[in-house]
Amino acid sequence: MADWLNTFFASYDHTLAAAMHGVQTAFGNVFFNLFSLTSKGGIPLILTGLILLLFQKTRSVGFRMLFAIAVGAIFTNLLIKPLVARPRPYFTEGTDYYDWWLAAGAQTESEYSFPSGHSTASMATAIALFFSLPKKWSWAFFFYPLVMGMARVYLMVHFASDVLFGFLFGAVGGVLGVLAANGIMRLFKGKVKTFWQEWSIVRLFRKKQDS
Image (cartoon, rainbow, N blue to C red; front, side):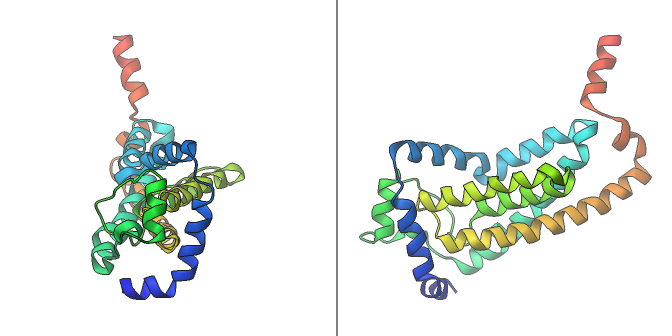
């Protein structure tokens, strides 16, 4: 599978990687490295979802976000990555990707390349936020995975096709996660109504202050 991806997407991957190399700068190296950290292992996004759970008004948003990330991670990290086992672009020395990777700061990654976990998690998050918040402006969250995908190709830690499929799996995982979260929230509202609808960290601190 990895060999087929390398062959079928060879022109697509090389063209976009060359384009990103063409805009590499010292500032870009720092910026895209820091931006990638916002989805490193999905941990910052998971923490954000957990924080949203603490507040009554954002609890449903956080719940959908966590489920979307979880389903996307199952697809990407547990199933597809070890199955495809595609090496990173910089794996082979002497290639354009290797030289461009050095120019971008030589950031190393421990897992396989396909698909991009960062792209999956960021797209799943954007999907969850899009379906949870007003559509007039929630579409803006899709800029997050777009920039994340650019960052992964810029740093030469992913092929452009890794990002493309990461977006696909993230979108599917995001939709399935939102649907699952919606079903569970309906169950919670019937079984644990007081906790789900009324408890919040804000109310907890207010009670402490009143006492």
